[in-house]
Length: 306
Image 1: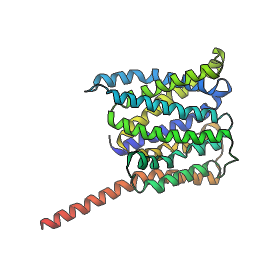
Image 2: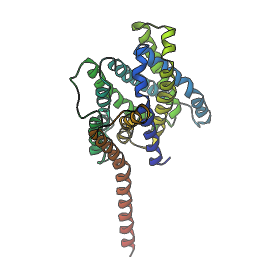
Image 3: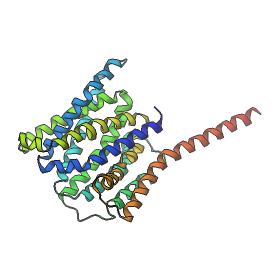
Image 4: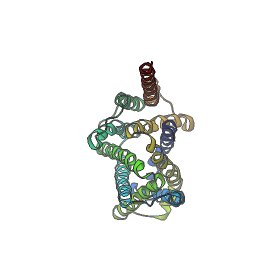
C-alpha cells in the first residue's frame, strides 16, 4: 500500500471518530462511562473477529508471543485513554475535551524521539503545532477554567499518544493489523467491564436506552476506525499518522454543521484551514523533497558518467 493510500485511511478514521464524538457524550445520559466503553469494544471485537481469523488463516507465520503481548499492552493503553476521556466528559465541556484530546498530536513526535530514537521528518514539527492551533481555533479560540474533567482529558491525550506510537511499532512489526485490533479491543473491553462491575450500576433497560450510541461507537468508531488506524499506520510514521488522525476535530465540526445545523465561527473556519494545511504539508512536502533529491542524485550519476 502506498503512503498516500495509508494516509487516506487515517483520514477516514478521523472522519468516523468525528461523527461519533456526540455518541460518546450522549450515551452517558443512560449508562456509566466504563459500561459504555466495555460494550462498544465488546461489539467491536465481535465485528472484527471474523476478518482477523481470515487474516490469521492466510498468514505465512504464526503470531509470536511478543507480538501478542504487545497487542495486549496496546489494549491496556487504549482502555486507559478511553476511561480517562469518558470520565472526563462527565464534568468537562465538549469544547475543552475536543481541544485537550488533540494535544496528542504534538506529544507523539516527542515520544518517537524519546522512546524510539527516531527523528520525525522536519515538516512534522511545524505541522503538529499547526494542527493543534487549528483544533484550538475550531474549539472557539479559547478554553474555560480547567477542572478535574479537563485534567483527565489531558491524561487521556498522553495515553492516546502512546497508543498511536505502539500501534505504529507493533502494527509494522507483525503485519497483522486485524489481529492487533481484535486483541486490543478485547483487552479494553475486559478491563472496562471489570471497572463497570466495581463502580457502576448495570441495568438492562439503561443499556437498551444507549443502544444506538453503543451500536455506532462499537461498529464504526471502534471496529472500523481503529482498524483503519492499525492498517494505515503500517505504511506511515506515528507522527504523521497523529496529524491525519487529528482531523477528527475538523470532521466533528463539519458533521455538526451538516447533520445538526450547528454553526462554525469565522475563527473556526480558520482552524479548519490550519488543520487542512497541516495534513497537506505532511502529505505533499516529504514526497516532493524526496523526488527532488532523487532527481538531483540521478543528475549527479549522469554527470559522473559523462
